[in-house]
Image 1: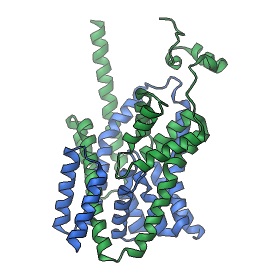
Image 2: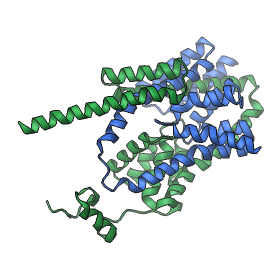
Image 3: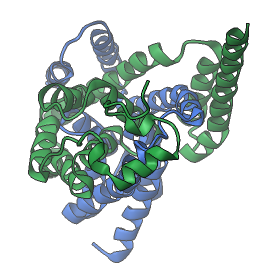
Image 4: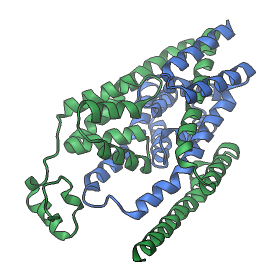
Length: 221
Length: 176
């Protein structure tokens, strides 16, 4: 394999030579597909307004990967992973990440504005109406119904993500411990994370090392 | 909108956003504690209603912060709370997105971080749901509605908006 084959993952090939190449001759890299700030803002506005009652990540993929072809699936999924690791709202982070890749700081701002400007105004309008009608029994009962649906959506998310992540005894214990501390004992988030995060990361770290050891043992034999 | 209130909004939402590992829903209990018990910007019932509105409305459900900010300080409260929630973490993501493609993609620590935090995140999301449910559901009919809606959502690929509208209508019928 030639070190500088014409694939677009130049950055993945080893050695400082690549870094120099990128710095000295950025045109050698596959040119990133760029978009205007207006186009980015419009697209994320459309994503946001389509996501009545949830499904925002599915809509993001539909628009960014399938329709606009701004990223391929692998790029998009790895971006989602990064945004899950970082603090903050996942969908907001994802919009900023995609915007940054397309058009730097302007793109990030455009994606963020597109995603939240209209929904924020809508919500403030709804909140003003709610303040006027909150003592109406009918409105209160309809909202109780919405609350039941919102809790159901949260439980569905637990179900969906739990099926893929709670696959052995240690993650199940971590899950239960976190829930007990934060949900039942009502510990603040940082106390809860101070206890559970080191346990979780330590467990995953050791597991990865064990896997690597098994792999290298297998390769040696 | 006093300067004091603006600073309180910035600290509550700005600091909490930086601790929101696993998305906005993971910090719902934290928001509830701060806005209801500590600062008394709204009642527990109003918080639960805000959660329901933000979930059903289009856009990221993390925009519940706009509603909480609105309760605390009107339209400016809403804008400050929203900015405090998205700008600090947005800057972090921007910085990381800039450097991400320079061959740092497969560090083992990143995998350990993700795998280790995933089950914790699921626990935090469940805690958020239970905290909201405990305040909202005084009536057994509402508990039953939540159970049915959860089963429907888990077992089918129905648009959640349809479920939300059905639940709202059922609530209307039960109250009438």
